[in-house]
Length: 165
Image 1 (cartoon, rainbow, N blue to C red):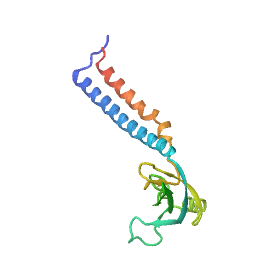
Image 2 (cartoon, rainbow, N blue to C red; image 1 turned 30 degrees about the horizontal axis):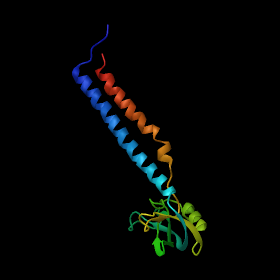
Image 3 (cartoon, rainbow, N blue to C red; image 1 turned 120 degrees about the horizontal axis):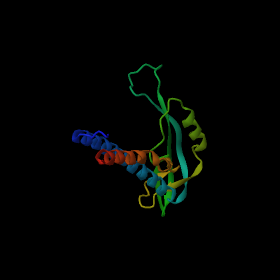
Image 4 (cartoon, rainbow, N blue to C red; image 1 turned 45 degrees about the horizontal axis):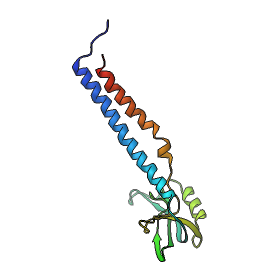
């Protein structure tokens, strides 16, 4: 003998299921958008650029902290390049910039890879030449898209299951 679910239980399960599906859908959309942006950057033209500045920058979350408190480090770069006969300048390592770290090692490695005065390849956005990067974006969001989609499918499954007899 099956026990019948009340309407309130069905509505509650539908709300939970739809909330999961919507949140999964939002994260799926954001990850897909990030993947498409990375794909787009990969197709930007590659041009030579001259590195004008390459250094490790540091910051503190609160300037009033004592010197022994931790600080963060990041790679800072500035370079010039030519696109369609015009000289441009950029300071983007990636579209999202260089990440901050509690140790300077990662930033120091990038300073060694892109030393001041060197000529490197950079990717230029042909539609907005002011936007150039030294390195493309990660496509990891596209490869991980399956995870938030589990929530979409699961949430819809909960909603449908709440109303099945």
